[in-house]
Image (cartoon, rainbow, N blue to C red; front, side, top):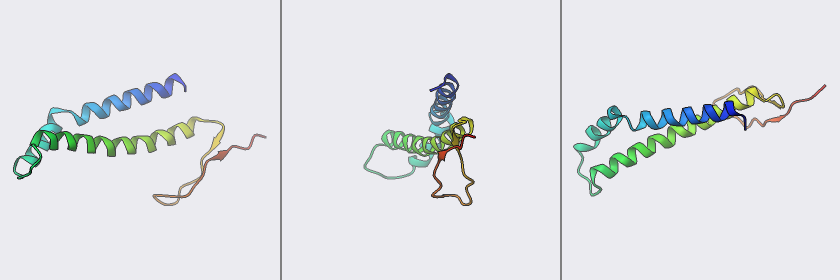
Length: 96
């Protein structure tokens, strides 16, 4: 794996973690869960909310990252996606 890709991954994951654990995000989750009556303590519900948010963001990040890697890989051809989801497969680029 190239150093460029490693740096992109490291920086993006760091940004995701910082955003998800920011004071603003924690306060937003605290406000959301404070008024609810629940058998799980609020601190664990907040941690769960942070982890669920990270899960969604990381999934989106993986899709974007793979697309970016394919863009810079000269050995792979990316087909055009016509809808949000597609059964498009990646295939080796024809070398002439």
